[in-house]
Length: 201
Image (cartoon, rainbow, N blue to C red; front, side):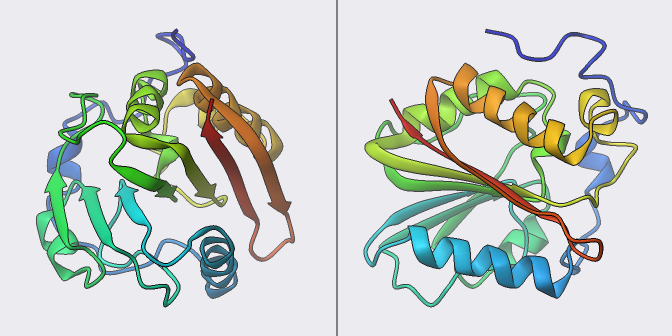
């Protein structure tokens, strides 16, 4: 099921994403308030021994101190991923070119995607893969704020309000075969924090 039309998935910069992210950026792309809220949300969802997949990640994952069994990271810059000390393993892949995850079925308890969902051109396929790699009682957490690389975000995201973006992420989850269990909106002026939480059906 396609969520975005050809027009919706257009980017201002349709150049190669891998080239755009070739140089590492050791920044957080969000305020401290946002990151603290994200860590608290993860702390509420994660339990010791969970297996976690951090999709579209970077050099830091903002995870709590919870002892996790295994953490797999993904992103577009190898140097950033190598610097993330919470990853047990990681891989580089451009989701806009290849939507098939090199991961086994039912291999994770939690999938998270922080501050990056706005760049997905084929979200239904990616969220279907999230659903596939999640265990039956698994959880997906997608978080975002108002910051982005506007030239790389899809048109549907750029044109939407924050609340509409939450609905867009919810539609991605549903298209991937998951159920939305929670929408969180803390939309203060300085640091809007939005998250959509889902589970396998």
